[in-house]
Length: 104
Image 1 (tube, rainbow, N blue to C red):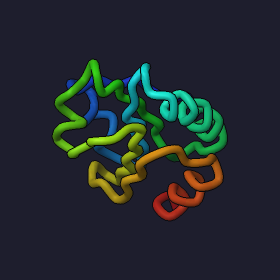
Image 2 (image 1 turned 90 degrees about the vertical axis):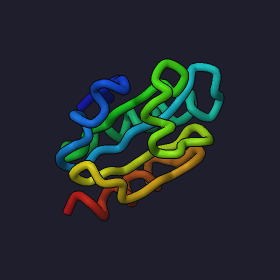
Image 3 (image 1 turned 60 degrees about the vertical axis):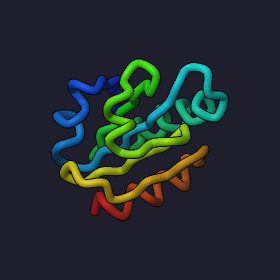
Image 4 (image 1 turned 120 degrees about the horizontal axis):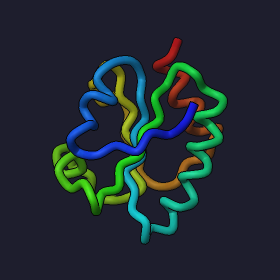
């Protein structure tokens, strides 16, 4: 599976059903650049989760809606509802453990 790039206009459709994890990031953010390859690697191991990335500078509406104040912030959603919020860098094992709670 690959990580999909979304914009404000497509975010709700991409995260409306099933389990998704959205990476709110920016190009200038060092920890965000560290998190991206971790999500890419995890997306290849986990089939039943949609992996989504949103550039907060290019898409300010969705981060504002969710009160995102620090990046990277990862939102885990199940059927459009936020079930977990993670701020800062997380390892692949940490993210896999969080996602496993919602994909059984």
